[in-house]
Amino acid sequence: MRLVIARCSVSYAGRLESTLPEANRLIMVKADGCVAIHADGGAYKPLNWMNAPNTITEFGDRWEVTNTKGETLTIFLREVLSDSAHELGEDPGLSKDGVEAHLQELLAALPEHIESGLRLVRREYQTAIGPVDLLCRDEQGDTVAIEVKRRGDIDGVEQLARYLEYLRRDPALGLVRGIFVAQSIKPQARTLAESRDIACVEVDYDVLRGNKPADLTLF
Image (spheres, rainbow, N blue to C red):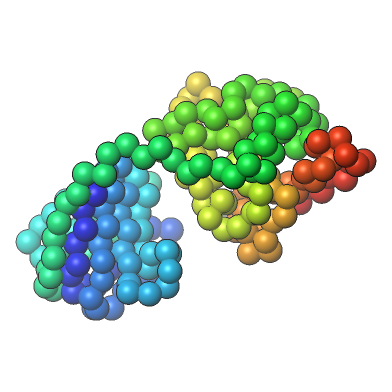
């Protein structure tokens, strides 16, 4: 990972256009090519970013980050205050808590509780950017990537969106769509999922364990 602290301005051109005025910021370049620009605040969310795969071209006074979609992120460097690189090694991934792991296990055994006609292809389907909780096929034979959370928030939707972007590059999988599954899903997460054409399903842990009648909600 490369970390650059610089006084810079940023412009983005693609599906829309945006500009960040000059200020001191952290520029983060991950090993997979993802570029994120952070301010000293705002928690985890970057001000602007470009997901991998990218091509980064460095000039004397600017970086140009481009991707295959024709999007361009240009970082104009006024002054570089710090520039360092760190080898983080392979990440083992996020460990799920007991309930979340068991929820995933139950849904792997009972995918029809998510959607009628679903059949499991593989649990913890490995990709270069992390494991997809459940990879399934629907009644039409299309691929369905499923992310399982105990509580559904924006981070989970973003995670599934990254998996979908990666999986759709594999022609062997054909059409790929996503379903975000949780015991409860926050309104903001549902809104984001809908904007990404990701379906949301709330499931009842006790129903899956056979402790009470089924009550499944599809949004």
